[in-house]
Picture 1 (cartoon, one colour):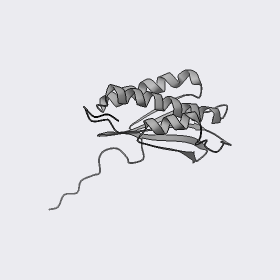
Picture 2 (spheres, one colour):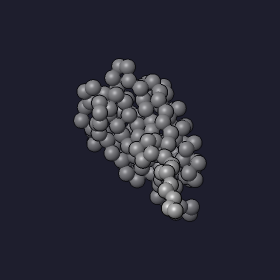
Picture 3 (tube, one colour):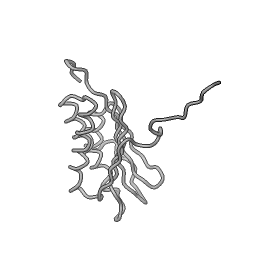
Picture 4 (cartoon, helix red, strand yellow):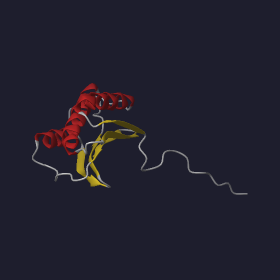
Length: 139
C-alpha cells in the first residue's frame, strides 16, 4: 500500500507576515519595528537589524509619495532560514517611474543584498532581500 502525503507548509507566494497600515509617514515606525522584530527571530545581528530598519524607512520614502489618497501601506515579510524578504507597497493609480538616482534608492541598494522596485496590479512595490551577516564578519 502506498501512502500519499498532503502538501503542508506555507503557500509559496503567501507572505509569512503581512501588516496593513494607513499610508502616512506617521506609521513608518510601526513597519520598521515589525521588521526589526522579525529579523531578530531569524538571528540577524544588531547591525543587520539596524540596516534593515533604515532600508525599510527608505522603501517607505519611495512608495508613500506614490500612494493614492485612500491607499494603505502594506508590508509583506517572507521568512526563510538565513533570509528575510520585505515588500513595501501602496495602491498607486498613476505611479511615477522609479527614480534610481534618488537618495532613498541609493541607501536601500547599499543596505540590502538585493532590491527591486516596480508596479504590479495597480500597486507600487519596493522589495528587498537581506541575509544576516555571519558572526565575526563585516559587510
